[in-house]
Image 1 (cartoon, helix red, strand yellow):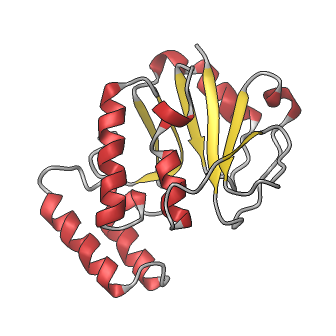
Image 2: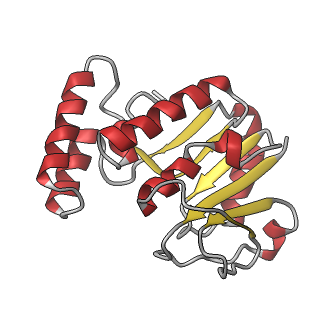
Length: 193
């Protein structure tokens, strides 16, 4: 089974951690960016125009499109550019490869549901009141359809990029990121439940 790792960085807001020597010789690590001068040890840098005017939405358009940005593999691991991939995590993937599903998420380490997350985002000033109200309405409108007692930490996840189900779900995710709120933990309600 072939595993590929990919990330995106637009607008130079994150520090890139180098890939461990033992990993960069075994796996492909791809970094999509609009910075033609960016160098990052262990990454194959792909300079592309931003898919959106907004840096955050540009990142998520890469993040939620593994069938386009992590091709020719059985599993794609998206990770935020400010995360360092460690050997232990890769060993976990290798040891559990036969248990992986089309989408594999990790539970949020702090908040347990989407309500806690939007309240925290509002308190921290990361979303304005108008977006908070829009997100709250979205959550309340969908609370019968989705399991709201699960909140994923989406800074890293594993997918089968060839899965039609994933392509459809992620396209819906990108549309909601644009129309509802740009926080994928909030609009990511129906994935992995």
